[in-house]
Amino acid sequence: MEITTALSQIWNTTGIMSFSAGQIIMIVVGLVLIYLGIAKEFEPLLLVPIGFGGILANIPTAAITEVTTLAVSAVNPETGETVRHLVQSSGGFVGQIYGFGIESGLFPLLIFMGVGALTDFGPLIANPKTAFLGAAAQVGIFATLIGALALTQYLGFDFTLADAAAIGIIGGADGPTAIFLAGKLSPHLLGAIAVAAYSYMALVPIIQPPIMRLFTSPEERTVVMKQLRPVSRLERVLFPLAVLGICILLLPSATPLIGALMFGNLVRESGVTDRLARAAQNELINVVTIFLGLAIGSKLAANLFLRVETLGILALGLAAFAVGTAAGVLLAKLMALVSREPINPLIGAAGVSAVPMAARVAHKVGLTANPKNHLLMHAMGPNVAGVIGSAVAAGVLLAVIGG
Image (cartoon, rainbow, N blue to C red; front, side, top):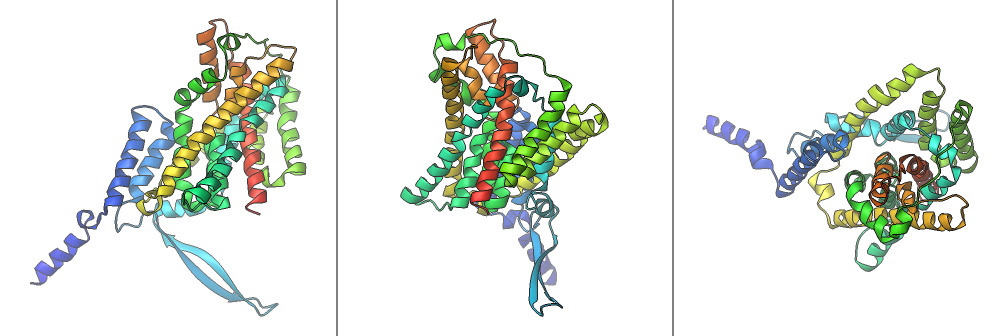
């Protein structure tokens, strides 16, 4: 009888007996993300760890993604008041990674440091007016914020203003920025926001070309732009310092992201810190990407992801991306009308900060219209400006809503 009871207890603790329908669905979602990363090569460096983290988040009874938080009280000897502190004490290894790197905002900043070390701002320095295209593409962020509030007002969704801001940042097509802002404003939506952001970044070659063709004429797509001027080393070194200085003076809340990005770029361009630049471009960004993906996946638990709000986030994210692309193209068309030098409106689509994929898409669409039309370097200007623009937009939202 005791053996039968013991066997029954063991059987009841197996995954077979403990799985819920939602957990099974989310494990399938995790497998789909892994498939897209491996077979279709859609952002594999992140979709593979995110998918695997999603599987770990839905394993019953193992508590791999859980974090135990203890409340510790102490008396302040100066005032006599009792102060209560929250201390993370234990939990699953993925949950602790999330608490260490995502809740603190550390991982996105380290990713931005690596992105800065990988980014050449030369095309933007050579043609500064393309910064306006990077700014225009951020229109999708604020349009989607309004859309999220409209869903709450008219369709019964339950998005707060902070939720709407976190969802809107998907329009910037910048995964680390989306994760940073969602982690600060709406941690419970982080999984859906991260998956939407990186999915749409991976689908840039599919989403953008129809929008680009819709808002440009065949003649506009054939416009050949003048070759960019060379950029001196002094300009490259002063640029990250100047951008950081402007950010400190005008928008201090954006300095975590902008500061990490510009430090990485300064290390790249200084010419005397090659070892640091190589470490930021390779070891640092690779290690953090592993932990970041697993931590994001931990928020794909069935109870957090399988909600009607998730469908709203996916729809709004797509709308944000489309609006940002269209806004960049339309501003480029306007600039072409007033500029003395020819501007191909296709480069405006690169204002979303999916670097360098959006610039490559603009280049490819331009080549299709005119085999002599090489737009890659011209599109890189608004593309890298979009990275700065999305970070600035996140800083504005954090200052206004998260303050």
